Image 1 (cartoon, one colour):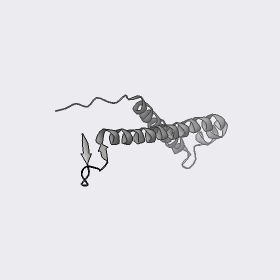
Image 2 (cartoon, helix red, strand yellow; image 1 turned 120 degrees about the horizontal axis):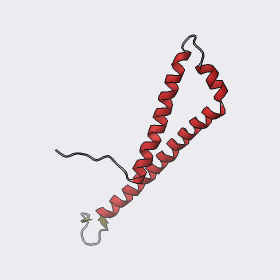
Image 3 (spheres, one colour; image 1 turned 135 degrees about the horizontal axis):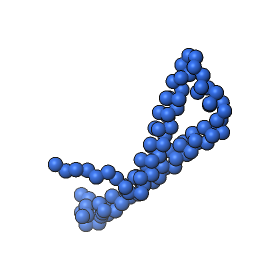
Length: 102
């Protein structure tokens, strides 16, 4: 489908299919950027957990104050970061959930 502007004969014709492809390329680029950023955040969290294992273990095993809440908070942070990465990963591969029509 083509659109011809109000100018008539000499006006440039814009293909809607081409503009959709350009828009899709931009959204794919954005998807890959989100995938890389979320993957970097997730990998960094796991690296920091491994690198600072002793310090984290010392803080997480304390029983005074609000220290017992730290493992729960850490689990939520890791879950959010890893979940975001996994979502973008599967979306980049084209795997999506089936939607039921009613």
